[in-house]
Length: 289
Image (cartoon, rainbow, N blue to C red):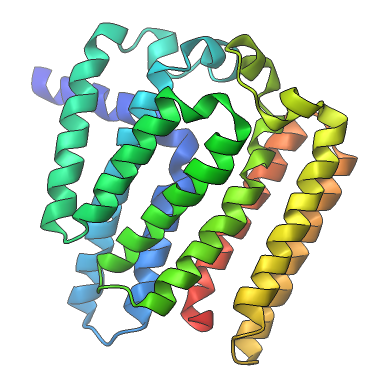
C-alpha cells in the first residue's frame, strides 16, 4: 500500500510539472509521429507501437525540460504558477539534481533505443542553454531556442517512424521557424513574473503597446514564410487549400486578439490559439509533404 501511495504521489507531482507544456511538447510530438506514419504502409500493430513510443519519448522530452526550467523560475512561478511542485513545497529544491540527472539519462537511453539519439541530445543541449542562459532574452528564448526545440520535436517524431528525407526536414525547419518567430506571444501573459526575475522579454524590452504591433508584424512574416515555402510549392488540392485557409484564418485571429484584448487571461487564450495553430500546421504535414 505504501508503494502504491508513493507511486500515485509521484504521478501527481509529475503531472504538476508538465501539465502546462503538454500542448507544446507531447501533443505535437505524437501528431508528427502520426503524420510520418501516414506516409508509409504499416499495420495496426505498427501504429499502436508508434503511438506508444511517441507518448513515452515526448513525455520524457517534456519532463527533462520542465525540471531545469522550473528550478530556475521559482520566483516567477510564485506569481504566475503557484501550484507547481517546487513553489508549493511538494518537491524540495535539494532533490532536483537527482531528478534532472535520472530523467535526462533515461531520455537519452530511450532516444538511443528508439533510433533518435541525435534529436534527444540536441534537445538536452537546447534545454540546458535555454534554462540557464537563453531564457533571459526574448530573441534567444523564442527565436533561437524555440525554433530549434520544435525542430527537435519534428525530427524525433518523424525518426520514430523512419529516417526523415531532406525535403521533410526542410518542411520541418520552416514550420519550426514560423513558430519560433511568433513564440514571443507567450510572454504577454507572464509580464509580472518575468519582471521579478529580470527577463528581457519583448513586452518588457519595448513596452506592452509597441510589442503587440511588433508581434503582429512577426505573425505577418510567419505567414509569408508559410505561403512562400509551404503553400505555393504544394499541389493545389482541396485538402491543402483547406489547411491553408484555416491556418491563415488562425493567424489573423491571433493578430486581432493581440491588439484588441490585452488582459492576462486574454493573452493566455491568444497563446493557446497559437499552440493550436502550431499543432494544426503539424497535422497538415499529412497533405503538404
